[in-house]
Amino acid sequence: MSGTDVQTVEVALDARRYPVWIGRGLLGDAGRWRARLRGRHALVVSNTTVAPLYLDRVARGLDGLHWSSFLLEDGEAHKNFGNVGRALEALATLGATRDACVVALGGGVVGDLAGFAAACWMRGIDFIQMPTTLLAMVDSSVGGKTGVNLPAGKNLVGAFHQPRAVVADIDTLASLPDREYRAGLAEVVKGAAIGDAGFFAWLEAHVDALAARDTTTVIEAIARKVRYKAGVVARDETEQGERALLNLGHTFGHALETAGHYTALLHGEAVAIGMVLAARLSERLGMGGPADTARLQQLLARLGLPAGVPAGSDAEQLLGLMRLDKKNTAGTLRLILWRGIGRAEIVAGVDPEAVLAVLHAAVSEASPAPTRGL
Image 1 (spheres, helix red, strand yellow):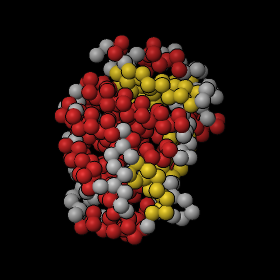
Image 2 (image 1 turned 135 degrees about the vertical axis):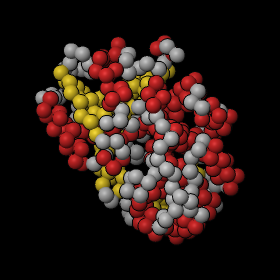
Image 3 (image 1 turned 45 degrees about the horizontal axis):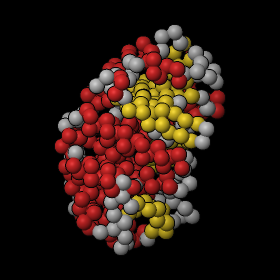
Image 4 (image 1 turned 90 degrees about the vertical axis):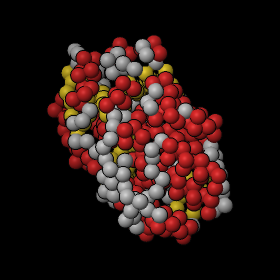
């Protein structure tokens, strides 16, 4: 696929607009993204896994600028305040001015932390997302959510700070382990499950091509998911209403990630499990039906994603962690549930006992957590 085959999705927020470019060879296509940098300073934030593979391609596009790089260790556990402070120190050492740009080269952890550092430096400077994982391409790189984790919970600190552009070069997916790739597919399924039954059926029909990483199918899936999310973000940038729907499965999922100290499950795996738990809770509350839950579980299984909580999970602990979720109001649980595929809803005042019953049932069925790697 050549550079002329790039798909472009525009995120429009009032007078602010930015492109999401999806295709092959984009990191090396500086003619496309270099113009989005307005000043002479740039800090590339990446990690120790991604930088050896792709930093040189980005560096060639930064020729002539005063730039440096800051590398994180790989993994969700490193999305913390300590590393935000180190990124800000790197900006200070660079002498970054208010027209500087932070370039986030990596997955969701890198993008979230780099974006948060950009939001903090001099009360907000530009940043560009260069996602290198499928999950980041279809979700975290688009929409301007940035943040870091605390021991008490995931993404409890952050800011809405939109990027200047998103450069989704799918060539980077070639180095992505199978488990990481499958985790990204969970976010694709999530978008369809929330509000696009037709897209869900398309995923069911193209599951084998997606699993095989067929280039044309992967680009189309990314573009469809990004297009859907861009529309939601345009209507509700700071999550006052509709955008909360994008968190289907996340209240359960974030609790699972926190309980596992951000190492037992990948984010997409936790979201996959969380979606199934949300569907089961919807059934219990008389909202959704078992046929749609079964379709969701079957699609996730065909994509190699987990549907059950890890062995050793504690239902009461998970409920306690869910109470810290940012969507909750006035001390009551506020969850994203559904009335079937493509019909998600925000439901306030959910009965904790119903949630606990679903969690207890899931714990009783628990299987061992997946093993990292291929």
